[in-house]
Image (cartoon, rainbow, N blue to C red):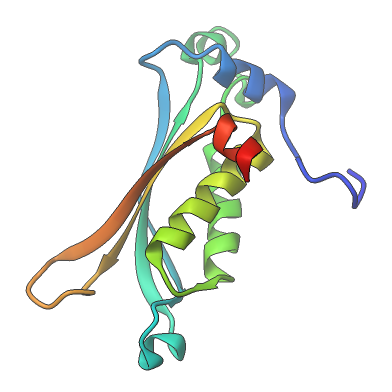
Length: 144
């Protein structure tokens, strides 16, 4: 891939996702990543744990027929990219992190949509966690 290419997509996986039936999804739950997140002074100095849930479209029929990772969304590649992005980020708002992470996944993996939620455990005293859930599509990517 050249350094000017911005979309390292797997055409087969993207095609499989674009043809996904309404019920076919790949998901990750509870992906734990540490990052700088928050707007309070102490939050800007230490990494905090966030938990990410992710849902992506896939046509499982194609992957089931071939039994080949090339015919599905490679969730290991997606999770590694998401970990690298989030761990290196320093956003003030969980909303910004969720939006940017969703757009990154759409752009780099050529998917038609993504659902992503980020929980920030312990952010509010007395609450197990708080977070943000976003849904983004190709149209959001085009508008960005």
